[in-house]
Length: 421
Image (tube, rainbow, N blue to C red; front, side):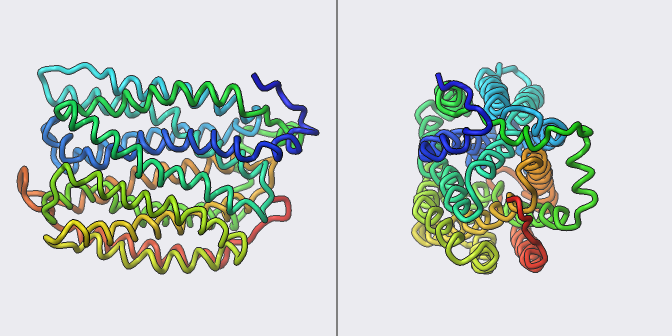
C-alpha cells in the first residue's frame, strides 16, 4: 500500500507516476459515467418494464444528478479540509454500494412501487457519486501545471469515450443476453468498482498540500463567500451550467427517438455508443493537446461552434440507414466531448489550489443540477401518444440546446485565470 506522502514532496513523487495516477482517475470516471449513461440506452426498456411515460422516465434519469447536486453542495463546505485520497476513497465506496443497491433491487408485483424503489437507489448512488468528479478535477488541478493540464483533462475525459465504446455496449449486450434484465449492468459496474476501489487505496498517494494553503482557520462557507464576491467564478459556473443544458437536454431521449422515430432496433443502439465512443477515444487526447498548444478559449470556440451542427441534426433525423445515423451521432460525441475539455480546463484555472476542491465541488453541484434539470426540461417538452409511437417536439429540444451553446460561447471570452492555477 502506498504510504502517505508528505505535503512538501508529494507533487514531485506524483509527477513520476502521472500515467498511473491518470489511469486510476480515469477508471473512477469510467465507472461513474457508465453508471449514469446506461440509463439512456435503457430508456425504451425501462419505460416498458416500469410502465412509465417519457416525463416519468426523465424523473428517473434526473434523480441521480439531483441527488448529486445536494452532496456536491455539501462538499463545497468541507472537501478542501481533507486529504484528497481519503475523500475519494470514501465517496467511491458509497458510490459502489449505491450501484449495488440498484443491482439488488427487489422485484414487486406493482410497477409503480418498482419505479419508486429504483428512484431511491439512484438517489443513494447520486449522493456519493456527486463528489467524484469534483475530487478528480481537484487532483488534476493540484498535480498538473496549467501548461500541461489540457492533456490530463483529455485523458480523463477519454473515460467518457471508453464508457461509450466498452461500458455501455457491454452492459446492453448483457441485458440482451439475460432476456432484457436491466439489473445486470448495475452488477457489472459495482463489481468493477470493487477492483477500482482497491486501486485507489493502493496507487493514489496522499494529497495534502492544499491543506497547507488552508492552514489559517476558515469558515466552512469560505468557498461560497469567495464565489459570491467573484464575478469571474460566477461566470465560470454559469458557463458550465449552459454547456450541460446544451447537451443533456438532448442525450436522455436519443435512444427512444432513434427507436421510435428513426426506425433503429434496440439491438442496434449499442452501435451508436460504440462508434461515437471510438471516435472520441481518438479525438479527446488530440483536443487536449490542441488546448495546451493553442489555448483553452480558441479550442473551446471552435469545438463549441462545430457542436451546434450535430446537435440540430441529431434532433431532426428521419428514417434512414444506420450508417448515416452513426455518422451524425459520431460527430455529436466528438464535438460534445471536445468542447468540454477546454471548458473544464478553464474551470480549474479560475481558483487557486487552496480553494480548488471546494470550487470544483461547487462546479459539480452546478453540473448535477443542470444535468437533472436538463432531463426534466426535455421530458416536459417531448411527448409520446402511446407505446411505440413517435416522439414529438424533440426538434424543439435541439434548438434549445443550440441556444444554450451559443450563450456559453459568448460568455467564455469574459472569464479570466488566476495566477495560482
